Image (tube, rainbow, N blue to C red; front, side, top):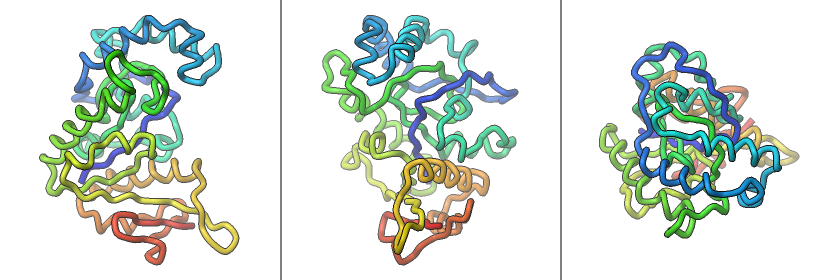
Length: 254
């Protein structure tokens, strides 16, 4: 069973936190290629492409100028601790113990517009590059076109080392559509989290993001490998709603 999640826009260098067996991203040359192109883009154009403020554009311009593949070992930090968004707050990897990290390294992947795909202990440098943004590498339609085959191949290799070919999709739609499902023979399970509103339930994005992280944490902390056990998730008031669930989509409500 392999879990996929989306990255976060906010990143913070945290050091290796006394972790052993840190790793490097799997596609350094591809990321180097993107960095070299991004270094040439002026601040104002970055702001337009990324739909961010001039201040954030300046910050990321400087990040790309300083980016160097050789700096990851000294200046990088583990991906699962570096991202700071709601998914990662729900995952709360800062309290993982020695048994959690090896399981997470084998069973969890973070999709990225800049690095392609990351394992939890892959050392990364801060950046901002959304998969669904308007930046198009030379010779490619967009970042989906650039990464699709590479990411699908990486997932295929990771699934080959699992006991089954089950993908637990905890990624956003923006990132999930990078996967070439025709290339991969697998079962996809998508947990969905909804809140009680009026006479029914609806998804509230900020709560759903955190819940995806909590589900990933639930899987890792309990070292689950049977997809049927996902239904036992009950963190923060959520419970499995059999009535709303269907094949490939398991719904949790509160």
